[in-house]
Image 1 (cartoon, rainbow, N blue to C red):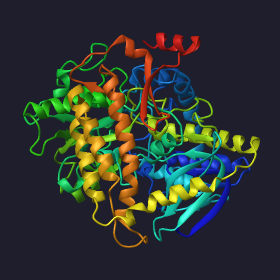
Image 2: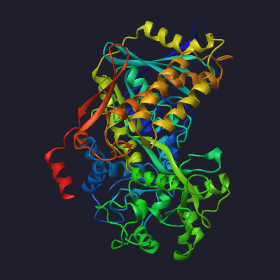
Image 3: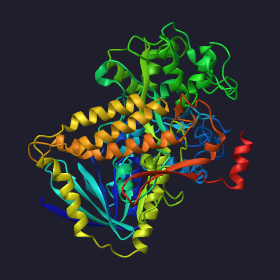
Image 4: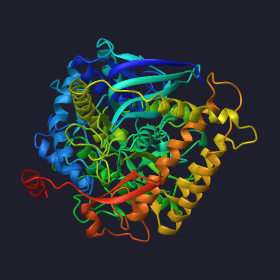
Length: 603
């Protein structure tokens, strides 16, 4: 058996993005011993790729904004499948969490009178996103890390968790390995906060980095926790489509929030062809009015490019399939048109969107101040995740908490842009607070050595297979399957075929072998990730098959309309007694009378 090291903590946080860092800071502030495990280097979390801003009803740009409007926008965007209590807490607490970041040193862009500047984003009624140019996530991580390093948190970088351990019903710790040397590590903890992000690497085209293999979802599922809303995958409408080496890399919604427009190959703003009846939008191809709206003119009509992400993504795919797309299979996103309308012209664009300017200049040879970008949908975010208590963020397994993208409930069927960053700090803080409380109120855990040995044997098995499957080939075929059969547009036949293919891929994954030793062996790491990718892929496909309607991020061409029955149901996933995955219906938590009144008031 591999050499192993043992570590003991009161609270162990798995994941060092915005949610994980905020949870670790809060738990440490409660006086408990905190460990922080991250799959990559500290500072490399995918939160740094969140560019547009953090949503909070500060009302600095438009004084009509409030937590009530933010709550209603979030519920509407989520097609009312959200956990209303989570949406309430999020809307109420986000402003305080943003001001907290500011107090800790975050350098937000400013209004002329010195307050935090806020920009427009899709689905938000008023300018609501506090931002740092188009590098908001990077500034958030910098701020949280700079603050967190003084809290006495023990950090384990480049360490991958492979199994959660239990003491009876409660979580007791986990088994992990360090990626550099391949040594096994045993972590004992009274409470664990899962903050590992999303599942994007289950798809071929994604904005997600290599770490996003559904680790947290899968670890919690195999430990007995329930997952929720796994059919709802968000395909961001604007990712790079050219050159192939950067396909899928995110193009922030902030481009559209600053006045960017979408055009097809004929130069037409096609978003006017499909505007919902209840959406106040321009009725003519009038860039100037949309520009005035983006600059804060309360009387201007909202441009259709700022509809919710699921809607914009489907409109882009419609143009591409109709043969009106760009040369490389996308459409054109044009921010250069504003140059004559704003003092400073191209310099204004560079100031507002510095990362986008450099990204396209360096990766695609395009100057976004002078020519349009080619963009298309990319797998970006999953609304589904671990089913948690709204207030404490504890899962259905005692002592196991989840926050951020790997937790479900806040976003319902579709997430609004900017709500991800506020989600991280609002519920990361709550998860850390309640995990520390659980650790204090419950006694020490007992580790079953049999569980540890079984986990270590499982992760080392690929070294014992010679004539075996290749891990990269299995992962490639999995990504093709999900992209082609469980993507933006779905139907029953495709998803049934996907499940058959996933069954074959499970058998192939069980035969994967690796060569070499355990010291930084990417083939071995990929082999271990396959279990997580296959678990979340099956959960997505099975949940999507059962939702026989179209709602939010889930669109079925064989059931293109909403079905009232599904409007009050979430789909939960758990591991059955026989080890097989089971999907079942649970009612959407009903909002209380106050929240019902807010929804009615906001239309």
